[in-house]
Image (tube, rainbow, N blue to C red):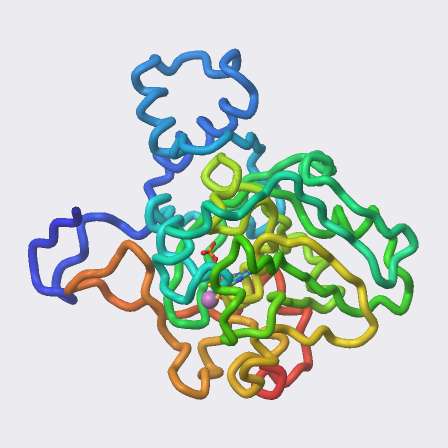
Length: 331
Ligand SMILES: Nc1nc2c(c(=O)[nH]1)N[C@H]1C(S)=C(S)[C@@H](COP(=O)(O)O)O[C@H]1N2
Ligand SMILES: [Mo]
């Protein structure tokens, strides 16, 4: 628990929002150690390694080892959201609209066998068994700031590789301008799919250059383990500079198209959820401001709202994708 000694605004919270570099480094070293096996661990005592292991990996699901990403901007140096919060406060409408629903009901999701079909305007359409898709490229750990359109945010260490690696494998044709992401919609295992809140399956989309950007991640894990069902097992999209709903969970099909995909949220409310949905503090949602956000795990009487950053803080990496575009019009 955070202990505060004075009134908000006069005294800073005891816990810095930035993890001290040393602790961060230890955590990274540990993940590298887990990736490289015990031989590389060397000096740390068993006890301290054990303590670090608990901080770095919740130890509930199968480990998914990864090396630290070298992609510019991929390793946010902010305090990680607790695994508990990241895996119990979710949006996954196929399992209900309450934040607690996915953690409670997603155990029915059957992630094996699982295939992902990649088709549309490509030279080499393919159907990947999840086991093969995981191995298509080396797994990297990436710590991304995530911002939900509803005004909350988290910092999550994902495990995966750039979507661009998969795109290169299937060789898109010259007229492929967009990528459409289809997610599982199974009435038998997903209680929310019977509801009319969205037009199922949940479909999302990116422009080709967005999908090819090295920060766009095909994620198989988080916190050093495979994804929990409620976070989109066995494979999901993660697009950190866009509002959370763009990051479609439990992908079953990736299709290359010439026309912009009709996305589930855009179909449900086009004036509220545009195709791009880049995080933008200067463009309000029609029903609320997007200027600030609440970091999950920081709630409480004196927890200050944070200022939302342009492109969720990834402007240096992705800003040029939108050069010359009117971001109020293309929201
Ligand atoms: N298939 C599917 N993907 C989805 C959603 C959903 O309801 N169904 N919700 C989106 C929303 S609104 C957010 S904020 C993120 C939440 O991801 P998390 O629960 O891993 O934090 O998933 C996105 N992906
Ligand atoms: Mo969201």
